[in-house]
Length: 389
Image (cartoon, rainbow, N blue to C red; front, side, top):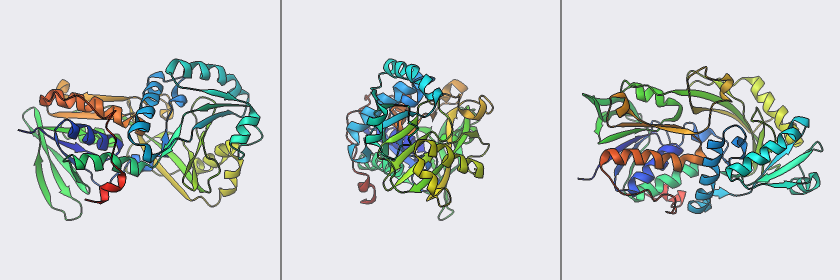
């Protein structure tokens, strides 16, 4: 009999988990309470991380990012703009950060190339005259929705069922095992019980809520960040501030816009994020230090949005969430006395495939499936095929 799995959440992680499990012969149903990628994934800035941002303080995350960046370049080249990135110093603190940054990138296996200020300005004329140093890294950008659709289109071609607007209201717990979920169709109001051999919780900053339905605890610290979109493609590469991660230190292109991000503060409810006006002003102020032209759009942003990062940790662990690692963790809740239930959280969209591999490995051990992961080699179908079915 074919083993079955319910994957709760259709963001980048849930979509990648569905793809991985279907390649291993598991019958997968993806449950999403809204539209595809309508949670955190659909509200990120679409930065394909080289890992350089984390190299100095969070080497584990940095290594994960550069490895996965190269894998994604192989399996989804249609979806990625491998335009590269620049880390630029605009003050003495940035200059002092350059050497430890270069050393940390080298330790993490992240390629770098130092540029003169003239070379940097030739590559990106919109940079300010305050550039003191520049380092080139292999960053890139992607469309978050298309990212998810490519994984899901491939999963569905291999037999997965994708069910948007299907909200999990309860988990079916019998004895010490999760055996399914009670699901409400948000369009019709109809409720049904769906059973499966395993349930995978890939709901990002909502992971603790879903886990609580099974009476188990997941240490997620939802941390919000404001991003601002500005009409006009001011730069063609990802522009990063050469310094430790801080507010408004990334300006990146997305089609005919640029996105400035991001701030960071803890939130209690990922569904209710009030955007502080001062954070929006800060994005223009700080982003304008890197690309002065964006300040001209301060009174007419194309869009202002926020998302809650699903960082691993407890609320109050670190101020604003900046000190929490961007790595990920997979929880087999058999360790909590509840079988048939696995949670994956943390990480980034860039590392979604690796997160899925770790999760599918755990799930398949529990299901008795011995097929190895193939997602690092199997090319994804076009995201457009998601709409063909």
